[in-house]
Length: 375
Image (cartoon, rainbow, N blue to C red; front, side, top):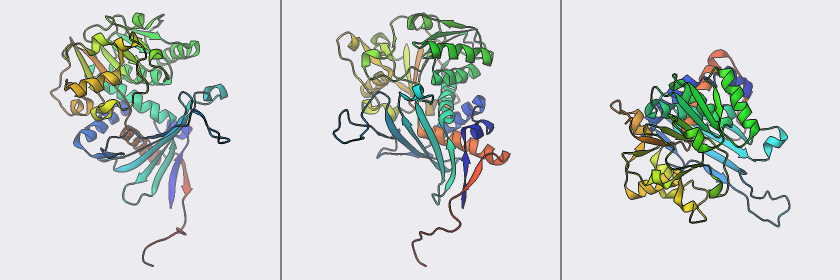
């Protein structure tokens, strides 16, 4: 019995960076979600995954301590349709990693046969995970952005910002300008270099979020996770024009004028509405009256769902051929990340790797030593 191992270099050769294919794969993934042909963890079939955190203090020698962005996570899921397999994405994260020359998060993906549980593949998943996030951003743009969008804004030009921009640019081919706001000099330089390499329109390095969002047709938010509510980036009142599409891949605050607006003027869209019930996934809350005048997008979604206001659900939208965006509405789209996205894109790469003879076959056993049942 063997399974296929795919390194990061193998994954690249197997097409993990092929964004148009990834966007179409995400489209099919959400159609399967809408049909119910999937399973997630938890009693309600809706858990994002299981995350292990560390204590703030400990008298046990060697016990890791809590810090921003420091955790271990497992994300299990089954996806049906042509995929018909089970997957686990696992990762550890530490924001101190970049100082050692390695990514903040180290991700791996495992595919399992749905009948026997035997491993099919084990693969590097850093690019895979960033790609499926970018693919969902592209899918949001396909459904909710102005098809003639000219100005694209990126708030947080890090890795996810770059991959999300790639997804959006696949759908917004008439873009003439990219506006960027970021706190780190290095990430801003890397974004500019990336856009030049990809042949994208000129990049304007903005001094504020308001400047970046002004007159933008699509706004991508992909800032680094922080621990305090007041440190989340803020989209202030009055900067989002009618018809704008805001694609949220990270914690970001918006002025309450948007969340308090009629649901015909400002429309919230969830990748999966159940993930935003009961404020799940919100890591911090306002600490002052001034901060309470703002709300995170996840918080606003939870409030709208609790109040019975209209929240669009991406799985329903991709399955509805009659849907037409309202060109006068602001669409705020929340992308929380669903493990089935990892399963579908991993499967596509796995199949292409087999076709191209990419990767290394590793032995599990010739004959299992540990057996059970009747002899």
